[in-house]
Image (cartoon, rainbow, N blue to C red):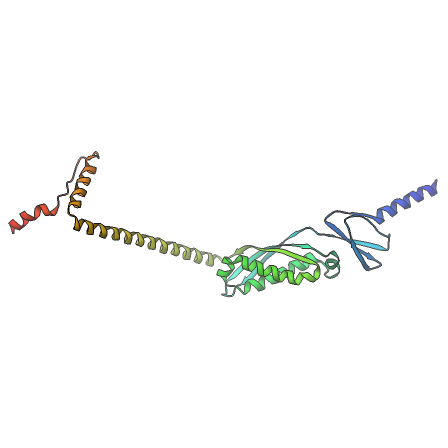
Length: 247
C-alpha cells in the first residue's frame, strides 16, 4: 500500500515538473544542463526533470512607455520628450541569450536614442515633422535590437513639453501671424471694393442716365422703410445753374 502511494506521488511529481503547456503566443527556450537546446511551443512541452529548464517568452506586441527625457534642441531650447515604442520578439532564443533583460535594455536604448535624435533637430522641426523623427527613431532602434531577436514596429513621440517662456513666445507669434493675415484680408477687401467703385464710376461717367436710375432706386428703397425723416439726395448738376448765376 505504501509502495503504491509512493509510486503515485512520484508520477504526480514527475508530471508536474516535466509537463508544460504553452499558449499560442508563447515560446519556451529549453536549457539542458545550461546549454540551449531549442525553442519549443505552443502546446504541450515535455521536460526532463532536474536536467531541463524552460524560459517562457511572449511573442505578442509590447507597448513600452519611455519616460520623459530632457532634450536640448539644436537651436538651444530645452524641452521634455517622451515616446511609446511598439516591438515584438521574433527570435525567442536570441532574446534570452543575447541580452539579460530585453525590456529594460530596450527602454535604456530608447532613452539615449531619443535624446540623440531630438537633440540634432531644431524646435520647429521637432514640432512640425514628427513623422520624420518617428521614422528615424524606429530605424535606429530596429537596427540595434535586431541582434537581440526583436523587431521594432513603431515609435511615436507622445508629448513635447515646452518651457512656459517658450509657450508664451509661441502664443504671441501665433497671434501676430493671425493679425497679419487679418490685415492682409482686410486690405485685399478694400482693394477689391475700390476697384469695383472705380469701374462703377467709369460706367456712370460714360452713361449719365445710370446715375439718375440709381437715384430713383435709392429713393424707392428709402420710401419702403418706416422712417420719420427722409433725405432726398439732389444731384449737383441741378444746382450748378443757380451757382453760376450767383457768381
